[in-house]
Length: 229
Image 1 (cartoon, rainbow, N blue to C red):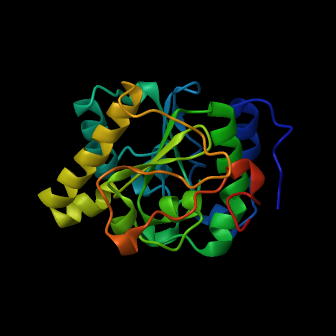
Image 2: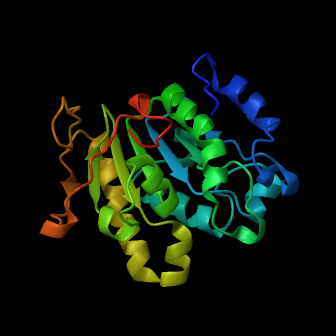
């Protein structure tokens, strides 16, 4: 697996990604959809993968799902231009299917280095694939959302993918709205960041049921690119 620890800038990393042929997704892409936004952002959004519009334009979250996400962020005074938006995979899966494990593995080094270089205060994981990867868990997004997790000096806020809100209606959109309000609370200092030192992460937000105890959230710098410890 590649290691981009010596790549010093996001521009350099994007150039490398633009020529990537490490999985079969490169065969059908129009563009590598690397990222967009403020490279020094305090809020980073990590989605699943590009769709048709994103593949055509080379920019993440520009279709209907992206418009909804941007609208929900704006409700909390968070402008798209002030966030950094990336995806788990940088090339469009054909037919907008779910990314395969080997495709996610091929893109892990890029995402890891993006997070390291941007160094955001809050990472918003959008949807199941992003959340499971970043939290190193098999627990689904429905159980994990509604809370802010301490994530080694950062906060991690999982939420539904906006495509689920477009399919599932107002309830899912309202749940996303609640999650993004947690991001605003963190930025306003109403939820502090205390990095764990060998202790358990303490989620902020709704109180989970006993069987919904938060999974251990690993340090991305101490893992094999968000894999097993």
